[in-house]
Image 1 (tube, rainbow, N blue to C red):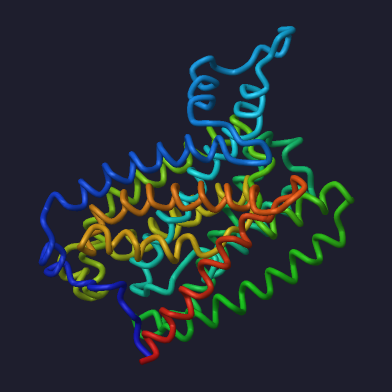
Image 2 (cartoon, helix red, strand yellow; image 1 turned 180 degrees about the horizontal axis):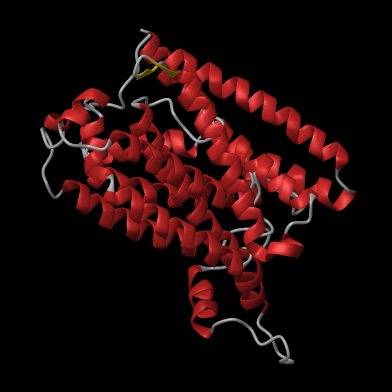
Length: 357
């Protein structure tokens, strides 16, 4: 079975049937919708606040904890909800951008950091860093670095298993991702058994995906990774368009394919690792959002699809996390990975059946 290109891969079709300004108009609308979503989500939870209360708390800034009269809205917003919303934006944008990169690299619209094992590799890397208490030696960068190494190793392994005769086979890709993820799941279970109770709790949260421990410093770190990775991918967006024609055609058109593939593998792994390090394994965002972004853009041109996917992924995660922390009674919350799995699994089955036909 040969590779399945995402939507319409030929760059010759990139602008056909779509107005040049459509994608940028959709991007502006999405940015506005993202800002509105953040304000509305900040008011939802165990205690509801109106948009006016949210805006007032934001305008007054972080609360002074030494003051005698502290507005409870400010405390709730700045200490709990704002970090989660910002982290949701960064996680969603990072996973969506990573999904665009992997679907372009593998020329397969079933590709996703979760499906092909990158998330599992990054998770194991982060768990090893926690188990060895590497943050005591390397500081706050220990967990992202270890997660990055695990993600790159897993992606390289799956890509090598799926590549045959210059092509990436769909069956080999999916089976390789399943096998690698299953093996790394066993490694995670072993790490869980070897961990202390506190480390085991953090490991379980990572396996399920959760934003409840997000902090503003973590948002700044992961946001820096997103900005860096998205800029790199944007510089490769035209090469992605050419690579969709096939590796041999891309070589003939002047693309350094080996460097291109290495850049996408490393960048996608970096973006995935930054989310796993702070939010755990959250699947299917990188599968769903690139398809939606191509529909919104009206073209498979990565110059337009990549920014649309990044913003759309951020908005999807804001509402997924809001639902996760609001749907359960008694202040309990679902892992956000459960919400994205409920959305993504049926979508994956739909894609699989469509390509099977």
